[in-house]
Amino acid sequence: MKRAILTLSLIALSSSRLFAADPMLQEYSEALALEREAEKGDKEAALKLGRFYDSNLSNEAKAIHWFSKRCGRWNSKCAFDIGRIYQLDSNYVKAKFWFEKAYKMGSADGAFMTGVVISEYESDEETAMKWYEIAHKMGSKDAGIEIGFIYYGLYDDLEKAAEWYEKSYKLGNLKAVIKLGMLYRDDIKDYKKALEWFMIAYKN
Image (cartoon, rainbow, N blue to C red; front, side, top):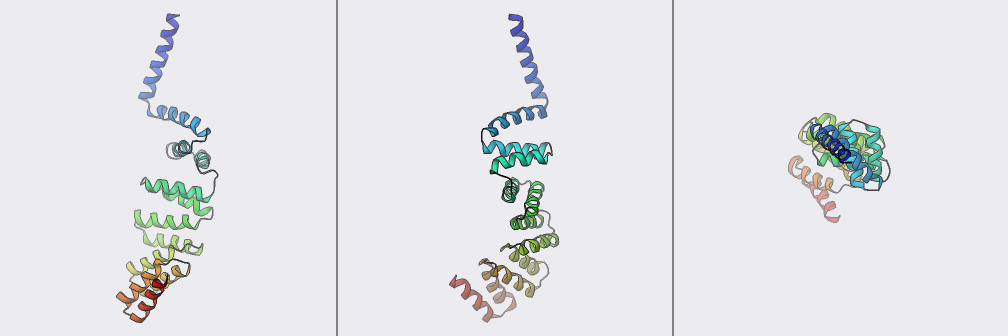
Protein backbone atom coordinates (compact mmCIF):
# COMPACT_ATOMS: atom_id res chain seq x y z
CA MET A 1 0.00 0.00 0.00
CA LYS A 2 2.81 2.41 0.98
CA ARG A 3 4.64 1.49 -2.22
CA ALA A 4 1.51 2.29 -4.32
CA ILE A 5 1.14 5.68 -2.64
CA LEU A 6 4.82 6.40 -3.19
CA THR A 7 4.53 5.42 -6.87
CA LEU A 8 1.54 7.71 -7.35
CA SER A 9 3.40 10.52 -5.60
CA LEU A 10 6.40 10.07 -7.86
CA ILE A 11 4.16 10.09 -10.95
CA ALA A 12 2.48 13.28 -9.76
CA LEU A 13 5.85 14.85 -8.98
CA SER A 14 7.34 13.92 -12.33
CA SER A 15 4.22 15.19 -14.10
CA SER A 16 4.43 18.52 -12.32
CA ARG A 17 8.11 18.78 -13.23
CA LEU A 18 7.30 17.89 -16.82
CA PHE A 19 4.68 20.65 -17.04
CA ALA A 20 7.05 23.12 -15.39
CA ALA A 21 9.83 22.19 -17.83
CA ASP A 22 7.62 22.35 -20.94
CA PRO A 23 5.57 25.59 -21.21
CA MET A 24 3.51 24.15 -24.08
CA LEU A 25 2.37 21.19 -21.96
CA GLN A 26 1.49 23.62 -19.20
CA GLU A 27 -0.52 25.70 -21.67
CA TYR A 28 -2.39 22.58 -22.79
CA SER A 29 -3.17 21.80 -19.18
CA GLU A 30 -4.48 25.33 -18.67
CA ALA A 31 -6.49 25.04 -21.92
CA LEU A 32 -8.20 21.89 -20.64
CA ALA A 33 -9.16 23.72 -17.46
CA LEU A 34 -10.47 26.63 -19.51
CA GLU A 35 -12.48 24.29 -21.71
CA ARG A 36 -14.28 22.88 -18.67
CA GLU A 37 -15.19 26.41 -17.57
CA ALA A 38 -16.18 27.51 -21.08
CA GLU A 39 -18.49 24.52 -21.47
CA LYS A 40 -20.27 25.69 -18.32
CA GLY A 41 -20.94 29.05 -19.98
CA ASP A 42 -17.98 31.10 -18.75
CA LYS A 43 -17.56 33.68 -21.55
CA GLU A 44 -14.18 34.89 -20.34
CA ALA A 45 -12.87 31.32 -20.41
CA ALA A 46 -14.28 30.90 -23.93
CA LEU A 47 -12.47 34.07 -25.03
CA LYS A 48 -9.16 32.91 -23.54
CA LEU A 49 -9.59 29.50 -25.12
CA GLY A 50 -10.33 31.04 -28.51
CA ARG A 51 -7.20 33.15 -28.24
CA PHE A 52 -5.18 30.09 -27.24
CA TYR A 53 -6.24 28.23 -30.39
CA ASP A 54 -5.86 31.36 -32.50
CA SER A 55 -2.46 32.59 -31.33
CA ASN A 56 -0.73 29.47 -30.02
CA LEU A 57 -1.99 26.78 -32.39
CA SER A 58 -3.15 28.79 -35.44
CA ASN A 59 -6.31 26.68 -35.47
CA GLU A 60 -8.87 29.09 -36.91
CA ALA A 61 -11.80 26.65 -36.82
CA LYS A 62 -11.29 25.93 -33.12
CA ALA A 63 -10.73 29.62 -32.38
CA ILE A 64 -14.02 30.54 -34.09
CA HIS A 65 -15.80 27.77 -32.17
CA TRP A 66 -14.76 29.23 -28.82
CA PHE A 67 -15.12 32.85 -29.86
CA SER A 68 -18.71 31.95 -30.82
CA LYS A 69 -19.27 30.62 -27.32
CA ARG A 70 -18.06 33.95 -25.98
CA CYS A 71 -20.28 36.01 -28.29
CA GLY A 72 -23.35 33.78 -28.26
CA ARG A 73 -23.12 33.08 -31.98
CA TRP A 74 -20.65 33.56 -34.81
CA ASN A 75 -21.31 36.61 -36.97
CA SER A 76 -19.57 39.75 -38.23
CA LYS A 77 -20.12 41.56 -34.92
CA CYS A 78 -18.39 38.76 -33.03
CA ALA A 79 -15.42 38.82 -35.42
CA PHE A 80 -15.28 42.62 -35.07
CA ASP A 81 -15.34 42.39 -31.26
CA ILE A 82 -12.44 39.92 -31.34
CA GLY A 83 -10.52 42.36 -33.54
CA ARG A 84 -11.12 45.14 -31.02
CA ILE A 85 -9.89 42.95 -28.16
CA TYR A 86 -6.66 42.25 -30.03
CA GLN A 87 -6.31 45.93 -30.93
CA LEU A 88 -6.64 46.95 -27.27
CA ASP A 89 -3.92 44.42 -26.47
CA SER A 90 -1.70 46.04 -29.14
CA ASN A 91 -1.69 42.85 -31.23
CA TYR A 92 -2.30 44.66 -34.51
CA VAL A 93 -1.57 41.73 -36.80
CA LYS A 94 -4.34 39.69 -35.20
CA ALA A 95 -6.61 42.74 -34.95
CA LYS A 96 -6.29 43.33 -38.68
CA PHE A 97 -6.95 39.65 -39.41
CA TRP A 98 -10.23 39.61 -37.48
CA PHE A 99 -11.37 43.02 -38.74
CA GLU A 100 -10.90 41.72 -42.29
CA LYS A 101 -12.83 38.61 -41.31
CA ALA A 102 -15.67 40.85 -40.09
CA TYR A 103 -15.59 42.81 -43.37
CA LYS A 104 -15.84 39.60 -45.39
CA MET A 105 -18.97 38.79 -43.41
CA GLY A 106 -20.50 42.14 -44.39
CA SER A 107 -19.30 44.56 -41.71
CA ALA A 108 -18.63 48.14 -42.78
CA ASP A 109 -17.01 48.71 -39.39
CA GLY A 110 -14.69 45.78 -40.10
CA ALA A 111 -13.54 47.43 -43.32
CA PHE A 112 -13.16 50.79 -41.57
CA MET A 113 -11.07 49.38 -38.71
CA THR A 114 -8.89 47.46 -41.16
CA GLY A 115 -8.09 50.86 -42.65
CA VAL A 116 -7.41 52.32 -39.21
CA VAL A 117 -4.94 49.55 -38.32
CA ILE A 118 -3.16 49.93 -41.67
CA SER A 119 -3.00 53.70 -41.27
CA GLU A 120 -1.93 53.89 -37.63
CA TYR A 121 0.32 50.88 -37.29
CA GLU A 122 1.59 50.22 -40.82
CA SER A 123 1.72 53.89 -41.90
CA ASP A 124 0.34 52.98 -45.33
CA GLU A 125 -2.17 55.75 -46.02
CA GLU A 126 -2.84 54.78 -49.63
CA THR A 127 -3.88 51.24 -48.72
CA ALA A 128 -5.80 52.55 -45.74
CA MET A 129 -7.73 54.90 -48.02
CA LYS A 130 -8.81 51.97 -50.20
CA TRP A 131 -10.27 50.31 -47.14
CA TYR A 132 -11.98 53.54 -46.09
CA GLU A 133 -13.53 53.80 -49.55
CA ILE A 134 -14.85 50.24 -49.21
CA ALA A 135 -16.23 51.09 -45.77
CA HIS A 136 -17.87 54.26 -47.12
CA LYS A 137 -19.60 52.30 -49.89
CA MET A 138 -20.88 49.90 -47.24
CA GLY A 139 -22.38 52.80 -45.28
CA SER A 140 -19.70 53.78 -42.76
CA LYS A 141 -20.30 57.38 -41.69
CA ASP A 142 -16.75 57.68 -40.30
CA ALA A 143 -14.83 56.59 -43.38
CA GLY A 144 -15.40 59.83 -45.30
CA ILE A 145 -13.72 61.90 -42.59
CA GLU A 146 -10.63 59.69 -42.72
CA ILE A 147 -10.47 59.93 -46.51
CA GLY A 148 -10.90 63.70 -46.29
CA PHE A 149 -8.14 63.90 -43.73
CA ILE A 150 -5.78 61.94 -46.01
CA TYR A 151 -6.55 64.25 -48.93
CA TYR A 152 -5.99 67.23 -46.65
CA GLY A 153 -2.79 66.09 -44.95
CA LEU A 154 -1.11 63.80 -47.45
CA TYR A 155 -2.13 65.24 -50.80
CA ASP A 156 -2.90 68.85 -49.83
CA ASP A 157 -6.08 68.59 -51.92
CA LEU A 158 -8.55 70.86 -50.16
CA GLU A 159 -11.32 70.37 -52.70
CA LYS A 160 -11.22 66.59 -52.34
CA ALA A 161 -11.01 66.91 -48.57
CA ALA A 162 -14.16 69.06 -48.54
CA GLU A 163 -15.90 66.61 -50.87
CA TRP A 164 -15.25 63.66 -48.57
CA TYR A 165 -16.12 65.54 -45.38
CA GLU A 166 -19.44 66.41 -46.98
CA LYS A 167 -20.03 62.78 -47.96
CA SER A 168 -19.43 61.80 -44.36
CA TYR A 169 -21.89 64.44 -43.16
CA LYS A 170 -24.54 63.15 -45.56
CA LEU A 171 -24.23 59.75 -43.92
CA GLY A 172 -24.92 61.37 -40.56
CA ASN A 173 -21.52 62.23 -39.13
CA LEU A 174 -21.84 65.65 -37.47
CA LYS A 175 -18.11 65.80 -36.76
CA ALA A 176 -17.69 66.31 -40.49
CA VAL A 177 -19.64 69.57 -40.25
CA ILE A 178 -17.05 71.07 -37.91
CA LYS A 179 -14.28 69.81 -40.18
CA LEU A 180 -15.95 71.53 -43.13
CA GLY A 181 -16.41 74.79 -41.25
CA MET A 182 -12.76 74.85 -40.19
CA LEU A 183 -11.55 73.84 -43.65
CA TYR A 184 -13.45 76.68 -45.35
CA ARG A 185 -12.47 79.20 -42.67
CA ASP A 186 -8.79 78.35 -42.15
CA ASP A 187 -7.62 76.90 -45.46
CA ILE A 188 -9.98 77.75 -48.32
CA LYS A 189 -10.74 81.20 -46.84
CA ASP A 190 -14.37 81.07 -47.94
CA TYR A 191 -15.93 82.65 -44.86
CA LYS A 192 -19.47 82.53 -46.19
CA LYS A 193 -19.25 78.77 -46.68
CA ALA A 194 -17.56 78.40 -43.33
CA LEU A 195 -20.42 80.25 -41.64
CA GLU A 196 -22.98 78.05 -43.39
CA TRP A 197 -21.33 74.90 -42.05
CA PHE A 198 -20.88 76.30 -38.56
CA MET A 199 -24.60 77.22 -38.53
CA ILE A 200 -25.49 73.65 -39.44
CA ALA A 201 -23.28 72.47 -36.59
CA TYR A 202 -24.97 74.96 -34.22
CA LYS A 203 -28.46 73.77 -35.18
CA ASN A 204 -27.52 70.16 -34.59
